[in-house]
Length: 130
Image (cartoon, rainbow, N blue to C red; front, side):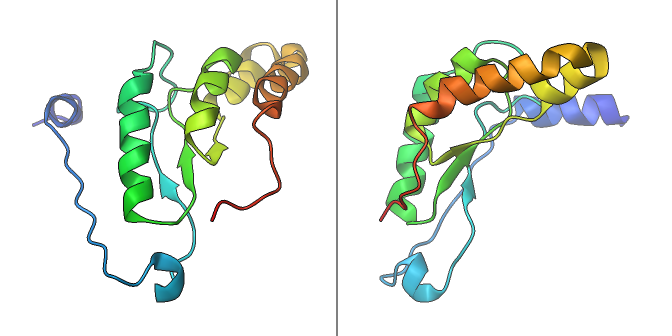
């Protein structure tokens, strides 16, 4: 099976994640880092609408299983999408839109980066969720 067919089959299959939680929370168990909640199951660089209610449900399930911060990326291609995702997570990862702009119209990259920062500013905090 060629790579394209294998990837197509993987995208059509339903992925399931099981998280086992013991009575000791991750902090007491020594866990560190963060949990990734992709904004879409599409590959990085995705530029179509996101199913924000599905992401909200997924982040809620992650938060019931762990005290670790939840981070979202993949598919957050515009400042408006970043602003919609930000209230659901502890951090938003923006990569492809900035890289794409740097590669095609580098003079627009500062304005795009500023637009993302302004969209996320309302949600910026230095506090840690407990």
